[in-house]
Length: 129
Image (tube, rainbow, N blue to C red):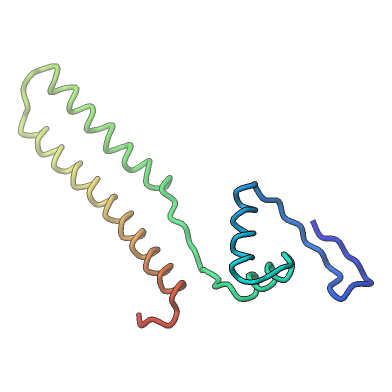
C-alpha cells in the first residue's frame, strides 16, 4: 500500500508486513549496521544490497517425465512378480528407462549447477568467472 504525504521531504510511504521472527532479524541487522531508524536502514538496504537475477528451476516440469518412467518400471516389475521370470526384452526396457531417468536427472542437476553458479557470481561480482 502506498500513501502520499505532500508536506514531507519523502512524500511516498510504502508499508510491509513481517512475522515476529522476520522483524527480530530485521532489528538485529539494523542494530549491527548502526541504524536507529528503520526507514533509514530500509533505504540503505534497498539501495545498497545486491540484486540477483534469479530464474528458479521448476521441478514440476520434471515430474511428468519421471512419473512416466516410474509407471513403466512399475508395470515391468509387476509383470516380473506375477510370472517369476525376467525376459530379455524386460531387461532391455529397464535399461532404456533407467537411461531416460538418468538423462532427466542430469538435466535437472545441470540446471541447478548453472543456477548456483549464477547466484555465486551475483553474490561476489568481483571474483573472476
